Image (tube, rainbow, N blue to C red):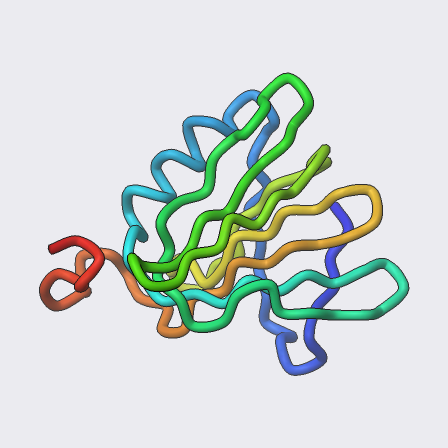
Length: 135
């Protein structure tokens, strides 16, 4: 799997998800982290980087077209929402801390890497209360 990392992230540990488990894993990821604040960053193979969405609640990540491996990341609330399309994904992985806490979802294509980064990574059971998104 290709990855484009920020220079400050040297402790990155990823768990690659097999293609036949993408739908199940993404559904579970979306349920566990719905409403969590994320930034969606897209890095090109040429080293360019852009922010597709910053500090918005995660609505979910799903397969838009499983046969073509097209994925979509949905973020936002009633006032502002973004659907970031990822056509023809080649790999999906979860970035985890050494303690197994999920920090980000990483989706690669042939020419880019999309990272869905949590603002405050923690175990779902450690979250205190419901987000506004869940109410």
